[in-house]
Length: 236
Length: 224
Image (cartoon, rainbow over all chains, first blue to last red; front, side, top):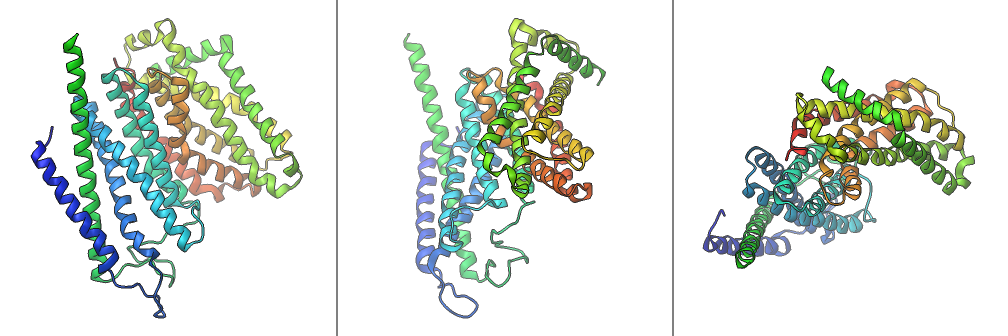
C-alpha cells in the first residue's frame, strides 16, 4: 500500500542495524552509573533505555490509531482501517512490554513489581482500552461497520487516556521524572551527560523504526489476506 | 434540545410502563451491596475500615447496575425496528444521543436513590453531607452515562453485545470511578465540599469532554 516489498526490506534491514547498535550502546557504551557519594550502582537502570523508548512508541502507536480513526470516519476508506488495526495491534504489544520492563525495574529498585501510581496505572488502562479495541474488532463480522465502529472506539479510547492520567494523579506519585526540575530529592532521576542522552536517542530511534517496520508488515499481511479472500470468492 | 427532551420522555414513558429495567437494576445493585456486606462481614464493626470500604462498594454497585441498564438501552430499540423509526425522525442525530443520555441518567438516579439507603443500613453508616454526596453522585453518573450511552449504541450491532459493553466501558470509566470514589470517601468522613474541589473539577471536565465527543461522533454509531 505504502511501500513496495524492496523498500520494505530496506527499512527492515535499517531497523535491524539500528536496533543492534542501540543494544550495544546500552550494554557496552554506557558508563557506569555512580550515586552521589561515588559508589557504583547496579545495572538495573539500563533497562530504562528500553523502557522509555517502548513507552514513547506505544503512545505513538495509539496516536496513530486515533488519527487513522478520524480519517476513517471522514473518508471511510479501507486503507485507514487497516492502518488503525495494524497500529493498534503493534501498540498493544508495546504497551504490554512497557509494563513488563517497568515492573522488572521496579522490582529491582523499589522492591515490588507494582504500585498504584499515575504513570503505571495509565499504562495499564491504556493496555486495557486497546485490548478492548481489538476485542471489539473481533465482535463485528461485516467489514464496513467494523471499520466504523472500531473508529468510534479508537477516538473515545484515546480521549480517555489523558483523563485517566489526571485522575490517577490525585494519588501519590512515585515514578521518577526523567526530565524537568522536579526530580525527587537526591535519589536520582535526572538524566545528564551526552553519552546517556545519545544512548537514549539511539534507542528511541530504534524502537520507532521497529514500530514502523512492524506496522508495514502488518499492513501487507492484511492486504495478502484480502487477496486470498478474493481468490476464494472468484473460485466459486 | 426540546427534541431530545421528547426522546427522553418517550424512553421514560416506556420504562415506567413496565419498570422492567428499573426493577432489575435496583435489585441487582442491592444484591451487589448485600454480597459485599456478607463478604466483609467481620470488618463492619470497625468504623475506620467501613469508611474506606463503603465508597468503593457503592460505586461498584452503581457501575454494575448501570452497565446492566445500558446494555438494554439500545437493544430494546432494535426490537420492532424502533431504531429505524428514531433515525427517520426529523431530528439531528445528536439529539437522539442527548435524549438517550437524559433518560438513562434519570433511570440511574432513581436506582441510586434506592440503593444508598441499603448501603447505609447494611454498612451501618451515616452520611454527614447529603447535598455533597448528591453532587458527587450526579456528576459521576453523568460521566458514566455519557460514555455508556455512546458505547451502548456502538455495541448494539456487535455479535456479543452483552459481553462487549462491559469490556469496552470499564477501562473508559476509570477516570470517573477514581475521583468519584475518592470524593465520596472524603465527603463521608469530613463532610465538607471544599475538600473535594479537585475531584469535582475532574468529574466536570470528564462529563463535558465526553458529552462533546459523544455528541460529535454518535451519528457514526447508528449509521448503516
